[in-house]
Image 1 (tube, rainbow, N blue to C red):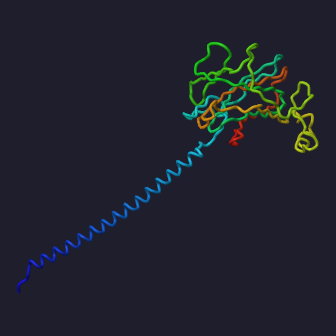
Image 2 (cartoon, one colour; image 1 turned 90 degrees about the horizontal axis):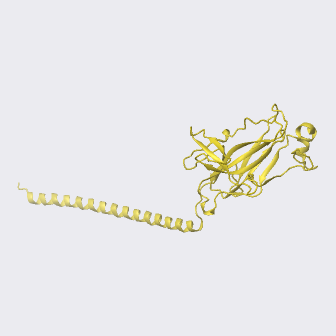
Image 3 (cartoon, rainbow, N blue to C red; image 1 turned 180 degrees about the vertical axis):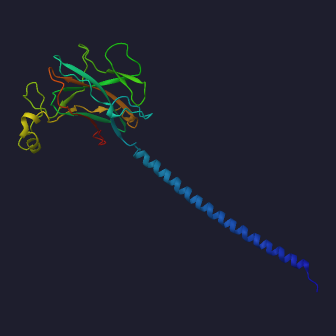
Length: 278
């Protein structure tokens, strides 16, 4: 029996060629489909970026706002902050025959804030008087004039120095931040007492009226700056971090005893635009 080997070889070659052709077709279809998908995604992404760019022209993105109070030096770029717990009042002597004052440093820092108001709330059982002064920070000790030093807790062996920014040209006395006590009672002589808002002030009547001889000194006074403190000279810098330094001066009355009740002081900074406070 004669077998035509040439014919068999030709059939085998034909089958191989058919299989190769089918593989090429599948690969071609898959490649075309992949390119189609990539092109579709690219067009969508490009359109999305164009849309974001157009929106950005009308509504620029702002960084989250933040507002904090620290005890001393604050550096937002390097995340160095002095916790407010380090702002403690010690060594106050109210037993002398002369008026005295004690200075303490605090800082208001944050970002995304255009302006804020400083506020103080304090009870009057010790009849202390308070003033706040703007201060400038220095890395080296000033050669003359008054300054307040602050030793860092978060960075050991580091001290910063603070001078009063504003003084009277004629007297040289420091100029405090302008503000008013919002609920100061009038006609109380030398005493600082909170006023009663009348018959409609149920909280005052129920809390303090029944103990007029004791709790009249426990009614808190509320002080606030007359104008808001601007965070930057240029409003366009609102997204940049800022740190403002202040000196809180506590004046003690004359001839008081040191064995006395504790006076409570609350310091806050509030931004009306953001609603942030601390």
